[in-house]
Image (cartoon, rainbow, N blue to C red; front, side):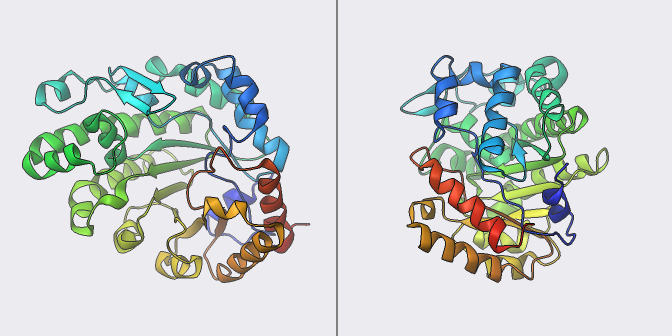
Length: 341
């Protein structure tokens, strides 16, 4: 088992810098497209054999040091009783947004083994095949709430912030239910065999620090506290576009803090303190010519040398248009420059 990634998560010295990419399994890979052409996105997520196959693809092809479960952050929200649809042009859609106490009351907190057994089966299947650690994941409560309140993706998050500011009791009631669901979901992933867990807070960067402290951070802390009581797997917290929130995200309780590209990696290491650091090259930097991409990676590795554990990653998910050969160049460069035997 190549456990370099887990060593870095724990702040241990590693023989080289481990690397994995957010969304490393997905649309940029012809191998993924071949499978996806035969089934819908939700069918792919809910078929353990296929979900396991696409999870393994990038690890086998590029030699990543960790695999991340192929799924979607909204799967447990569907299990709460909401109708979820994925539109090719618009992304995820909840036809009936949650904007009233009645709608909140109708949400259930599912038992993961009963509501999403396919996720847990995928984890067990992967653990029987992988020689690298498997990362499980969930969306953080605030990010999940935005989809439920807005009915899908948003640019300004008008309905979310209106609820926060005008109906805070309703907002907190909704977040409490989402948090209970997410906490149970991640605990079940750990029981099934996930060796690390990542909380994706994709939209939390839209919040002012004072609002993050009141409307998002307590729920992240609650989930991590629940996990600490039942498992010792490393926990990664990724607050996208969250450079202004770092003074607060360091208090969330995670082992590893993920950073996007808007903050130089050296500054991220300094702000993270005793936390391990994950990140943070711009996904579009993968379009650089080979020499320039390698130079940028080498510079990042140098600037991250003082981290208490460092995991090379993108600052957000890999884009579908990314040429696979550029991914290979990046992974090989991280390994070569960091001294992989």
